[in-house]
Image (cartoon, rainbow, N blue to C red):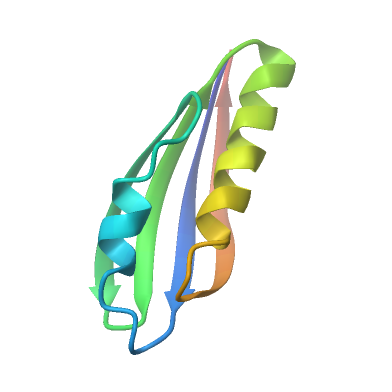
Length: 84
């Protein structure tokens, strides 16, 4: 199973290296592709795989880890797609 989602990260204005830290983070069974749209906003595509339960757990764990990065104020999931 594959869980894919787009997430909008709102970041603090002084945190210039947040994009690098989000994209170069080692996440268990989850890949991240991110781009900065505006100075305080980053859009990321997350993709997590595994069995049915594992894929969602991997996604949630990855999102929690990314939200805990210094400089991240808030994360909003914009859309989720689940592929069996």
